[in-house]
Length: 117
Image 1: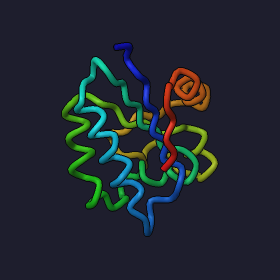
Image 2: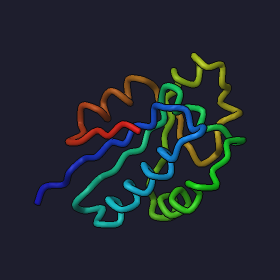
Image 3: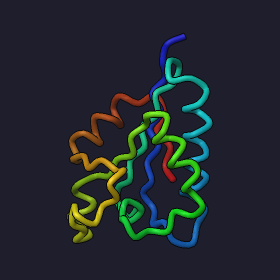
Image 4: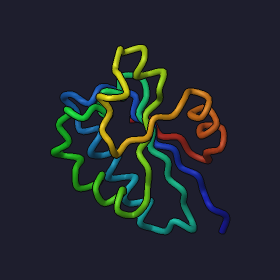
């Protein structure tokens, strides 16, 4: 079976919803099926960029984030989303990689499935 590319985009603010925990739970489920069968990318963009802040409350999502990181997955945030919200790179959590808009668009084009949370 050919490897499927799944992109999970978090584009909504991380306040007052369970989108982040549920999206990460989905990523965790797919990622643990098999890295050989499924490649999962996680990108924060738009208002979702606020989740990349060091100071954000990750209580509900922390178990999923730590498990994904231990398994070698990389969480990413779009640089232009940070800039348009006046969020400096120094405010981004150390476990999140900053990528540019062009790279996000490449990930979207390469993906078999794109899910928006």
